[in-house]
Image (tube, rainbow over the protein chains, first blue to last red):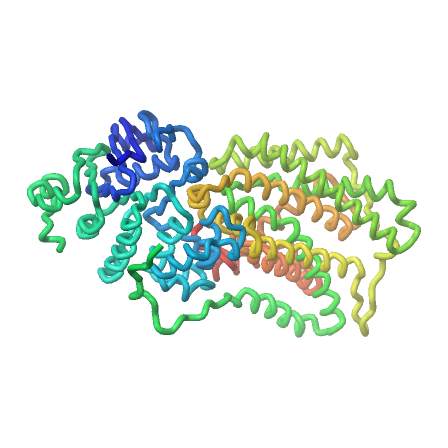
Length: 245
Length: 340
């Protein structure tokens, strides 16, 4: 039986005067890709940021490997093996590709201490990063920046990777390449919680799905079930799969 | 780890070269070149240029910590001047105590100055640690309160300095070996200005090395751009900020010693006087940018010396005019920090 790596129970989040999450219940099974879907403003990004401690949960519990994350500072949460790729990618644009990866590898003080085998694997996934190794990250294309953002999340073994809308603003061909790379991660049983608006990408990658609306999870189940049920898609997401193929 | 897929579509055939933005450096050289015909005398131009660069190096030492403090934590520390004043006064005490030793000759005088600088840095750094804990930490993210409370902190600091060292200006003469000038043709180059330039260049080189070659430096540069992401990678940016604040305060203390020796006197108001100059420098340079701060400081130093010679009345507002002109050209400063 698959163990739940991450569990959210009745999580509420307030940002200033605004009540954004209204009791989110969500489980992320180990070794699987869980898609978090929903319309704009449903609370998907807030959920990821709340898990990372960037916005504190005002109520409810968040547990990772059975231990509570509530109240912990973001660096402590990250140190437990949770990587976060934000919607804006969070690339340090004035730093080179190499420097971005050296920073992401907490155990490495300089390039020489990076895990060579893992780096070669990343270069295999994203050859552009090797070519632009000493190039300022700010000069990369949008797709290359997204590759760098994902590469930072996997440059050391992580228990859980949170990725927020990696396909946003990318050309279809680049999205296809990104799907290929994420499939490679999935094949290695990396646990991923992936926020996505692109249903094609969700269908291609997801094992499980949680659909959010108005700050709550309104549906959970197998991704294959949702992908096969256009009526459910229409009801939950306001779309039909045919329109997105 | 098997590589079963590759992402190749985004790799262009020709890799564009990363280019360094040289325009601010050209601007610095252009200011120097344009001043030459205006001054009309090669010897005066050399003297003024060396004086301007020396002043710029000192201002850079003082301002470098402030720009990183702002860049890292968005903290507007208007109390930075108190570290300058404390450093300068501490130096008067140390150099006064070592006067007999320093008067013996060359290396003894330099050693006395070195001891004064170390003491100034240590005391200013310690005060910086307390200042961050007591005054800055409660007002993170609150700009208006930061301005008010840090200015208040500087006023309190000034009054404490008056209690300890008295309210009057204190002479801070250069030791004998640093008095006078080297003559190159008709150009007189003051010895102390050469020493100030050397120390300033060493500090700049050390900062550049730290920022570009060490992981702490990488974290500082990354934190200036996006501190939330640095925390998401597992690093405690608050600790880093405290370290930078203390180092910046110590550098301000060092700058205070050098500024005092440059003016050959110190007063409790020295910090408030230099504060205006350093804020102009960090705004010109681009908030959070060390290289921008360096070029900005040299520009300010040169401009003050050139206009002081050519049109003393203009010198009063020349640096404000320089700031306006640069902000019209580059509203985010000479080297804007990209993600800010």
